[in-house]
Length: 267
Ligand code: MG
Image (cartoon, rainbow, N blue to C red; front, side):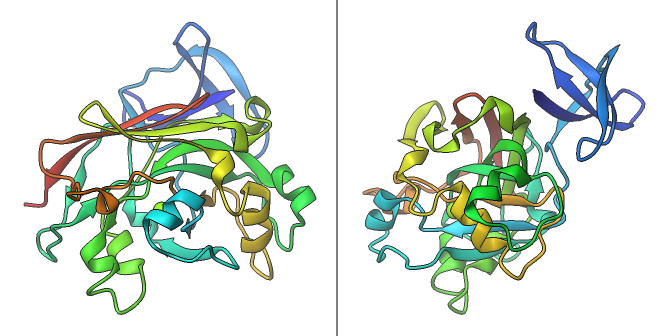
């Protein structure tokens, strides 16, 4: 099932199920518990990020060829960082280039996002996918100057500016994606393909990441996990490619769809 979250014409926030004909029907109930798809047409005024995560975990350097282009060693354990939930952005809404705390090196990262479906802790790799509700596309937008030079050796500052975590366009339930490693993932900047790779290049696959993150740590329903980006990011290009006002950046994943965001300046 493809689940969307949206605002209707009365301002109410609802969930809907996308039908094969492109129309969506309203969901009644809790997508993390019991729900049903009604016959009522979803009156979608504005598409929203598919969940409001209680926390947003991210894995860095998780694709072999991206680790190579970053001149980083293959990590022994997953490289974990977090984004604040205030960084979440809706499909179609802008990525805002920071100007108050200025960055001139804002980069894109196409990522498969896992959405946790139930409270879990100390999950084994074999049980890990049982805890997943579904998947969506993410853009791990990254201010490289704040991630590196001025970040105090932590990535958090450069990764968690407002709008730096676009999610969407929909949540695809796990039954439609039995093997996330088989997915293909792309980033297109103004229509030009800059990342185009396969999720089977992940160093730590989705079950391994969930097992690691849930170790002695509770993951709540709705938790979003960004699973890393393949090679082809802007900083590793010659010359480097940075997002600029007027750009349009799109993340595409097979079976999920396209997450498109324009780029504007803070002002
Ligand atoms: Mg990333």
